[in-house]
Length: 335
Image (cartoon, rainbow, N blue to C red; front, side, top):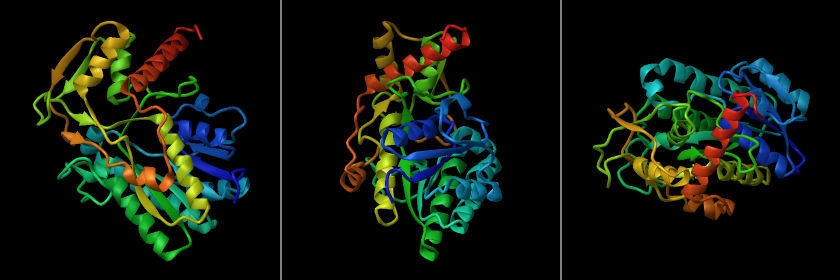
């Protein structure tokens, strides 16, 4: 299989999926996008990329799309991702993440797909015994979101044992930032990502932002996370796909930089960029949040030869801020 092969991207009109589409195009692949646009944005799909509006849980639609476009591989991003919402509405997450993924995997097996890249999460670890967290750490999800993703990993593991399907599950840490060329970013106005929300406050779309918990067992009392730039994450997906279609076996990889920053450190960096602090209010801890989550990223670097380009918190924040400015201009009819 060559890099001119066709890849189906589920959720390719969403935040991470749209960046993966750009990375695939840059690397010479032919992406095809399927997205129900519940959280995606049609304009994030580049011109010339085939687009199907539909639900990945619709096995017949997915099978027809795979056959029509001659797809040889699948990257699966579609799903729900908000941890507190998953605690309040677990069945939504088991439907949108676990059950829908089961149907998608069935469609892949039915059409002979042998390479499958899965958008998983570090939330499968829950509150880790130690940090950095390696792929061999116990999986004890603290939320239905994490559990729903772990269940999909199990389905892939068992399917790979019974069929020719091979997979790579990429466990994301905290994804942030936007395409440095301004081609894509986080489209949702009501997104819950820390850096997204902080940048919205910086451009005046929010009056303030909440810091959920300031009494964690961390240096400044706020949660510590391993923030990875979305474009570096997208490049990791392409490297994982290259390996799989080249005959690589199934595996699980952490996607992070291997170091973390607290909520307050992120806000300090944003303040430096904009020349002053945003308004912050303290709020109670959110259900499902853990105090510290940092990746052991040695395996992905060693196996995929992955070398991050944007491992700098100021770069991550600055690209996210530029994207919010662009969205605001578009909203006001200025661009």
